[in-house]
Image (cartoon, rainbow, N blue to C red; front, side, top):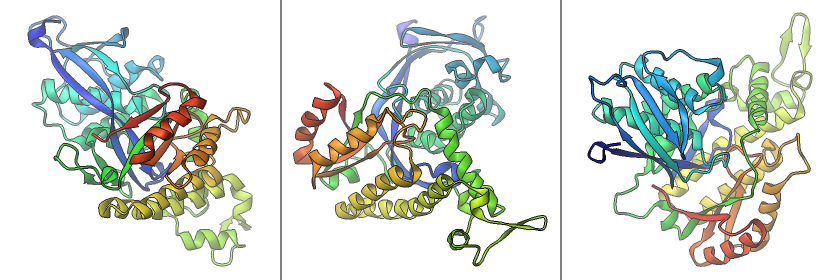
Length: 397
């Protein structure tokens, strides 16, 4: 690359603060962008160059197969690959009427792959920002970039996911997102980084930490998909597509024996227990309560109410463990690194903070909100069990 032509762009990872597995049910979530970022140094080819339509990327020194932007049809052999994500983002932006073109880029990432910090969403956001800067005078809005990443991950990459990860990475700061209308989600910027003021987390005298337990998210797609499928199954009993559309009172009435709701198939009245598994019903209970916790957590962030904030984070984590059941993979119950970290964190923290499963769950990371004056003690103690630098103290960007 010619040094005078190099352009640099970055995109952050994300942490979900509250709203565990609610986004794919048109629910609510609050999330933040964090200072573990993916960065790109890139160069735009001359308009007369024979490479003007070619995308070349090297990620951590590994070359990604070239992509010709004149051929953006989905390819089955690119499912689960970075090339699929790039091609999907480019296709979406082109269909939205934005200019696209080739570029050469090298990337480095501090967002650990398979960690639950959304390395894929950060990468998708990076591609969107590259196209925005190189070909569209930096005018592509954060929501469109997030939607491009979401489309690419679902369709071209082949992983079912909601839009939360991409929104958090694309908007930055702290955002509250309501997915009731998935075509036009309501995004509220609770905190915009770089304003010269402390984040709500800092105002409450807390530090945000992430502990890497040594597990990996890479082979857990089936576990994630099962959560979505089971929640949709419950919604289907009530003739709805997602749980957000289900009346909560009717749900509990059905659990109590069809006292006010019955679902008739032909001449037979079906019980919800014949239609849904117990685990699916527990996951639905998590959803209904998590929606309320998101509202309470957002209010607490705005008011810098530490006690109320930590109470809701603790309840969210407990619900994820008991009802959502995404702390370890049911396919490998012998491996419970996240469970172990939660138990040890509870012992270390006592009343000095709260720990919960991070993000999609089943493996990977634990999120911790810990008092400023105890964070070094916590880091030292937890790293005895999970290794040097397994605990990262983060900031919101």
